[in-house]
Amino acid sequence: MSNNGKMRIALLGLGTVGYGVYDFIRRRGDMEIACAMSLVVPDGVTCPIVKNIEDIYADETIDTVVEVIGGLHPAYEWVSGALKAGKHVITANKLLIAKHYAELVGLAKEKSVALRCTAAAGGGIPWLTSLKRCADQEPVIRISGIMNGTTNFILDTMHRTGGSFSSALEEAQRLGYAEANPADDLNGADIRRKLVISANIGYGCVLDENEVAVEGIEHITDADIAVFRRLGRVCKLIAASRKLDGGIAAYIEPALMLPSMPESAIPENYNLISLTGKHIGKQSFYGQGAGRYPTAYNVVQDCVDVRSGIRGFYTEQLEPAHVDNSTIIRAYYVRTDGVDKWLQSKVDKILDCGIITKPVSVPEIHRWAKERRKTDPDCFIASLR
Ligand code: HSE
Image (cartoon, rainbow, N blue to C red; front, top):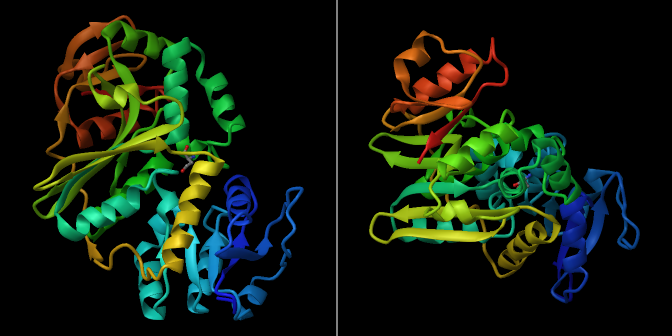
């Protein structure tokens, strides 16, 4: 911190979120952007631009590094380097935190600095901080919900307008909701990372993201949406998890919700994330899950928390846990170009374009869908809630 008590921040990245952080902080009196590192510098940015990360590590007047470049490299090296140099780190990088969770949490603890990533799950919703507060007092037994703004925007637009997947995706990209590689939104990789980070904090565990079953919405069509409308259902991409004796159930899949379910009403880029505590029941958190200012808001909130003295990560519990989805059993909508032996044995109802299965387990149907895509790359599945 500088002599006048201001938090002095090195800002890594001046993209969609980075510029939002810059814009918020330049209006504050309690913190300042000491310098930024960015390949592209938007008009109106007046702080010094640094070319070498080592200059930031060596600058003792800089107490905090905000990383909003995204991606794994060089974010991993720069965040690790900043923690090792004794700087607090605030990041919105889901990929980085989900992948290097235990190592980075350990490093922050060893150096007695803060590592915060509230913007990494839920965009502008104070979800991770609320989850941490709950987990400090109460066993969290379930975490679930809509945790990706881009896919919610696409599904909501397709349901409302009957329009195509590609035009809804283009609009989500134009509005700054999508990842640099939107495939991560569409195939569920982004929401899976958010579920892993949430589960780690809520259940006090360390999950390997590769164990979390994932089905995305990249194969959904406007014809599927028309079928769901006739069934009186709303399709949402859902992250679901629950604590089991000796493990965690955790999976991502499109789900066909009844109109009475709160998730059905979530519009545009909004998220709805819920936790269930053993004694307190369900609490839900709603707000914009993506976009410049909502995400930048949570980054700046983390700066405020660190300035007020918060240190370390949200939890220091790092118990490795395994995923077991074998007890989760539901009926599914399946659309594929033929009926194989397995599907034949599971048919409950035949629809115009697709079938409804008898109840099957998450591992069974996810495994089948992946195998099926070797011959029908456009096969799509969604569970019935
Ligand atoms: N691409 C992400 C989303 C950004 O759409 O939710 C916010 O994490």
